[in-house]
Image (cartoon, rainbow, N blue to C red; front, side, top):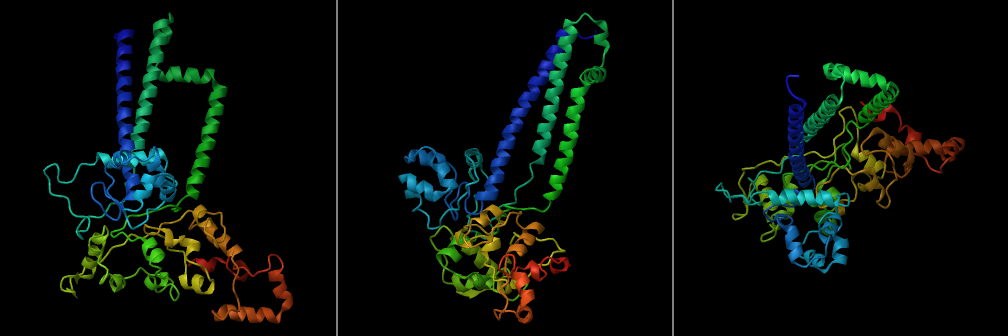
Amino acid sequence: MEISNIQSLKRIKSLAFAAITFSIAAFSNFASAQGEGLFKAKCATCHMPHKASTGPKLSGVRAKWAAGGAKEGSIYQWVNNWQTAAANDPYAAEVSKVMPSAMSAFPDLKKEDIDAILDWVDAQPVPGADGGTTAKNPGDPTTPTPVEEESNSWVWLIMGVIFVVVIMAVGGVRRQLKIATSDDEEAEKMTYGEELRALAWKYRLQVGLVSLVVVISVIVALFQSLYSINIMEGYQPSQPIAFPHAQHAGINGIDCKYCHNTVTKSKSASIPSVNVCMNCHKQIDGEGKPWAGQIKKIYAAAGWDKAGMKYTGKTNPIVWNKVHVLPEHVYFNHSQHVVVGGLDCKQCHGDMTQMTETAMVQPVEELNKIEGNIKLTRKTLTMGWCIECHGKKDVAIGNGKNAYYDEIHRRLKKDPKLYAQYLNNDGKVTVNELGGWECAKCHY
């Protein structure tokens, strides 16, 4: 042999050590990326690392809570549900009185997720401390908005490469040990491929069973991934201006139709124009409040000069990020569901009076918790979800709100036997019984 077994073992050992070291570094980068992604998805709407925004700054918050005498684990309970934390911990109760806006509950975040978020926040440099430009005020309309969470697929690719290298290194160590302890000269001449084929043939039954399981698993995973295409439950995009529905629709009691004024007469519910915002915010400027910066962004969008109490004509349109996205071949009419169907907004959007963030695509499990909602099982915004709702929701025919259904009711009354057929199973006339499952009703 040109290289002794001892030398080969040393080289393989070095390779394995390098792979393990690299994997540790990659895992650290992955944890940081995970913390950044969670922060942008859950926290960035209301919080900044080093500046107070709608909510307080998050940098050093764990140390602050510990120094303030908070109970152990109280901060994690606060993130999951601030009301529970305030009831169990006097320090959390005091914190709840600091900000006028209530914090959202995040019961899905585990302790590890919260630590990842706060670790990432604590690792962020203080803006302007490195000799660069001074950090912009969060209320400055020119302050860049949070970017969307980036994909971490490259991390998984690196991890896969690392595992392959480790497996090859371990396999090399095993092979060299076998050669070193064997007196068979033929064994030293075998290549990796030949040795692998011999090993596979020796254990062909086990290899065959494992291969069958792997193939079936890949096929099942492929079909499951196809079923998940365009399912976006829990999707929460960042927005250029923080808009707490809990403050406007909840505390202030503003009716949804004041802002979404086309929901009863149009296919679209419409995004309110900045002029609608200015109806209130000409007088409510939030001066001295944490949300004053957000209102300044509204002024910049409308071209409003607060000092001169007049419009300048220099507008800066707000570009909102769309939350609910349906495929182009799907037809959905808000007015038909709200006026004719009598559906409450919370059936699809959730309880907006409790949301401090811009509405997200609510998981069906969360929608089912709301009193008065039809209980469904299929994923939100999927075809199965709509079909299931059409099969359970009854139509209030003959209520004088829609001529189409009033005519159906009139005709049904003329034929009591036919009307009895509709009411036979569940005592109500459902959407699907009136053609709500016909393809052309929802598809172009």
